[in-house]
Image 1 (cartoon, rainbow, N blue to C red):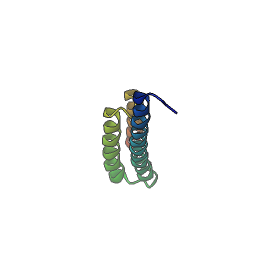
Image 2 (cartoon, helix red, strand yellow):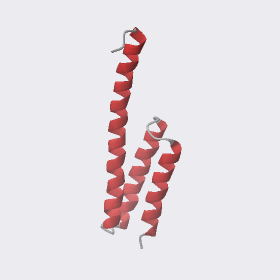
Image 3 (cartoon, one colour):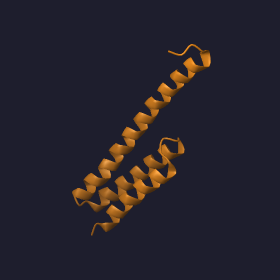
Image 4 (spheres, rainbow, N blue to C red):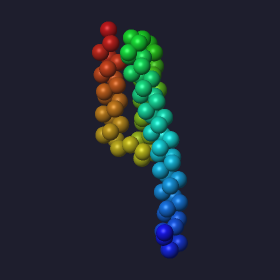
Length: 87
């Protein structure tokens, strides 16, 4: 256990940030699953709208520092490629 006041505060802050990051990552994963579910159902319109929502969620997570910009770019690129591949 930390003895120094600043170390105690860092523990609290890092716990709070970890909880927020976990929540944001979970929301992003859910939105990505919705895109792939629409692709599996072969519903192009639903896939397009889900892609828009997922892209927005990923970009917000990246701006908050939850994801690295290359990671978010890769996720968006793969989803867009999958949606565009639909007939």
